[in-house]
Length: 317
Image (cartoon, rainbow, N blue to C red; front, side, top):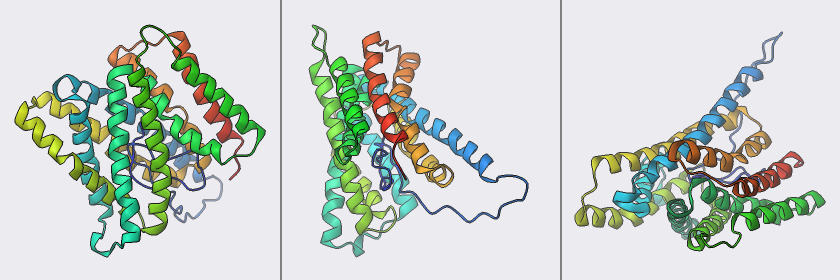
């Protein structure tokens, strides 16, 4: 979930920046090979371990954050998460705001709005329709971006498969929460916008300065929310702790983990692993929150994951 705060990997349109923050693929460091063994082996194994840890951290953070919903609501949790993301990204990137021109500022401002809206709609969806379903619907954003620019038959198959998965997930039934599903789809639209804006910001502003500035502005937008919550009903220490944990696990940890992962794992492998995030979210929701899913919902999640995985496996570069 995610997550998300730095430019996406340009060569892999199906691997966008998460609500937690993803970085552009850096140039791998120069390594002097050791005759007799492949030095990339241990590094890539460590990279795979980091990908697993990053995915689990992201979804676990969202699950822990949901525990604070009864006290401060999804808005309060998102506000705290935005604060944490801003502190981490600004500390790492140190954006030079005074040097930004208007041509650089307008996509940063747009990215800040989209960033906050994306996380708020996702966490509100989690509050209504469970973690696994909300993250799966949000995942449609990057998948749509990836398939929209494609012209291959396999991509048409992937689009149909993903659409079938969505139909299964939002099938009409008396207990269906259409507001929650709509919030999940809004998060998907925001994630798609986030990808496009991140690309623009990445081209116009060096490094992750633009994304850090957007995170800081988004945190400022949520500052009044935090003030109102404290004045109306002082939150408990437990609720604040859960919200801070969500910010650390869903923003700081994935961001730092991905900085290392993208230096050791090929971009295509990184994108392929990202496909399993909806499954990780469903498993974390089941084990951590007791959110059981019906077989049809598992089938819908599986169809969407299959669509992105197939698209990534046949993608070149």
